[in-house]
Every structure is written in structure tokens, then in C-alpha cells.
Amino acid sequence: MTKKILLVLILTLCMTNSTWSQVIDEGSQKKAADWVSQLQLGDKAKEERVTQVIAKHLAAIRDWHNKHADMIPDGAINPQTGKKLSALERQVIADSSQPASIRQQLLDGLNADLTPEQVEHILDCYTVGKVAFTMKAYKEIVPDMTADDEAYLMNNLKEARLMAIDYKNMKEISAIFEIFKTKNEQYFTNSGRDWRTIYRAYVQRIKKNKK
Image 1: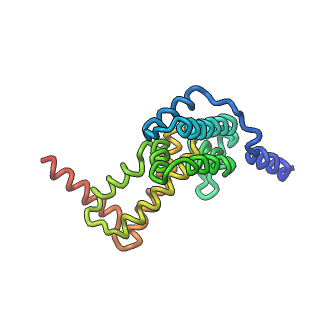
Image 2: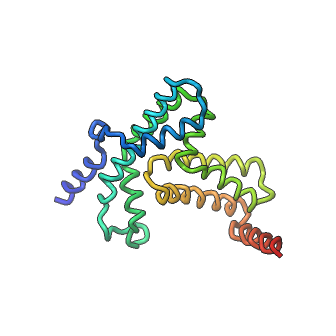
Image 3: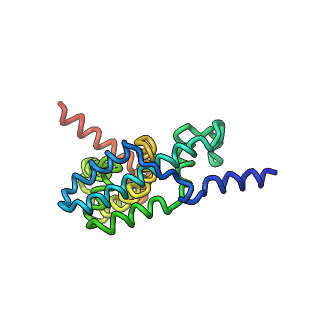
């Protein structure tokens, strides 16, 4: 019986994109248009195509979240810690089960009409510039950062950004970035530079500069 219930849950979470609502709400349409206008493409047909690609993606993310956010019941636990999952954790788990085709259709549509730099700009719009903001903070915290350090951190931040576009709200997006921020901090510790020590020194510099 338990196996049958699990199978039903998996099939429900793995619905194909043919079951998505094709209704694009006004909010998704407006947000997409605002983002595309920032690119100043100067080509009405291209602007319309890119706008629709983004609007459809935002609507698909919204629909998946609204249909599945409550699929993980209250009281479910983290099997590694035994602690009860928070509402945010349950939402992230449910939203992470969406078909990979949702993201891929967005990326295919963007890459068909935009340069790599323009695609990155749109991805930054989804994540409110968290890549640049977080990298700036890293450089302030680690003033002697090497080129290899920066490349590693940037790669992780961009991976976080790509994953984060699958999520509907900023709390979920921040939770995804937190995963990779933890990886980045562990990177410094593993290379013989304890992150807590580095951060403590940064805080001391800030306090000293305020005096």
C-alpha cells in the first residue's frame, strides 16, 4: 500500500508540461516586458518573442508552485537530521521536482534571440542581481582573493542563479543561493583558510573603519 501511495505522489509531481496552465497572468506579462525593455533590442518582433518566452516561463513556475507547494505535508522530517521541515523547506522540495523542460524551454527561447550577455542579464533579473551583489561582498570579505578563488566562487554563484530561476519567490531563491554560499565558504576552509576566521577579520575591519 505504501509503495502505491509513493508511486501516485511521484507521478503527480512529474506531470508533463502538457498539463500546465497556458494562462499567462498580467503580472508575468508585465514583468517579462519590463525585463526585455532593459535590453533595448530595437527589434519589435524579437522583443515580442523574448517577452512571451519569459512570460510563459514565469506563468509555468507560478502554476507549478501553486499546485504543488503543499504536496509535502506539515510534519514531514529531514531524514538526515530528524528535524521537522519548515514551510520554506517543504516548498523548495516540491518546486524542485518540476520537469527540467520548464527551465530548458526558457533557456532555448532566450538563446535563440539573445547574446550570452543578454541572457545573463535576464537571469540576473530573475534573481535580482544576487550574483554580482554576492561576489562584491566576497571581495570585501576576502581582500587577497586570487583569480582561481574568484573563478570558483563565480562558477558556483552562476550555478545558483541557474537553479534559482525554477522558484517562484525571493525566499526560495535566497534559500537556493544559501546552498552555494555554504559551498563557497567550505571552499576557503578546505584550502586552509578558515572562513569563520576570515569573516571575523572582516567584521573587525568594518568596526575599525567606523571609529
